[in-house]
Structure formats: structure tokens, C-alpha cells
Length: 160
Image (tube, rainbow, N blue to C red; front, side, top):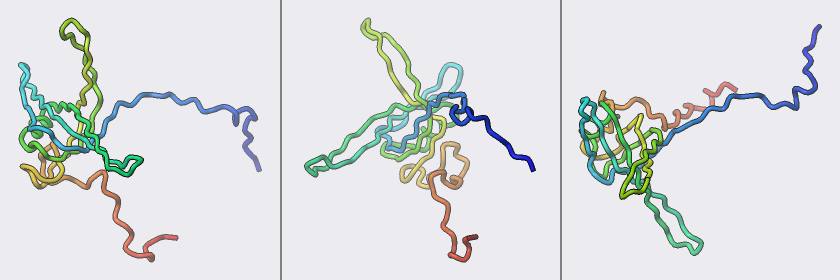
């Protein structure tokens, strides 16, 4: 019978993992204006969305407080075209994307603008497309990524 021995110092060393980076934004909010679709000279579609997210809380004295944050979102290509076609002011959307900061000059001063470039858009409740189809426009959405799995039918179905 053989046993595997660890080196004594290996328990003290942390594993060496390569650490990457993540640039991911997830928003669920409402459109503050109708989408603005434009076409670049190359023919690529670009759709601008203004999304509002609202946070509610009670302060120390028990008074309800509310803060709305506005986000600029850009959707490209077919996703942008579908956003312009099916979304309208007030419509709820789920957006996944990445932050992108651009630098520009205005009145001789350098300024920065941070926007969200959408990689995935899901249309939620109400609006022109009440069925809630996703930005791909290919019919009803598949099972939601944020819906929990169904509970077991009964205790007899649990394997332990």
C-alpha cells in the first residue's frame, strides 16, 4: 500500500493563478427616451439608448428616499436595429455589456465619457413588443437566465 505525501511547505504556499480582468455590466432599467438609430458610412447600424435605474431606501428617520442613475448604452448591428424597432420610451430592458470610456476635447478641456456597449439585450414587459422577445428578434425568449429551476415535484423525488 502506497500513500501520497505532500511536501511540508506546499501547504503554506498559495496556488499561483493567473489573474485576468473582467469588464462586465448588467443593468435592468427603463428607457428614458425612444432609441436613436443611425447608420455609419460603412453601413453598420448603431442604436443609442438612455436607461434609468432607480434605487429606493429608507433613511435613518424612516423617510423613503429614491435615486435615479442614468446610463448611456450603445447597441451595434442587428441588436441595435431590433432595439430601435421594438423598444420605446418607458420600456423595461435587461442589458449586458461592457464599460467603454472615450476621451474628447470640448472648449479646450479634455473630457471623458463612460458608456456601456451592449453585448446582449432582452426586452422586458410592455411596450411595442409585449411578448418580450429578445434583441435577436427570433421569436419567444428561451428560458430566462435569471429564472430559478422548478422545485422538485415531491419529497419522494429527492434522491437522499
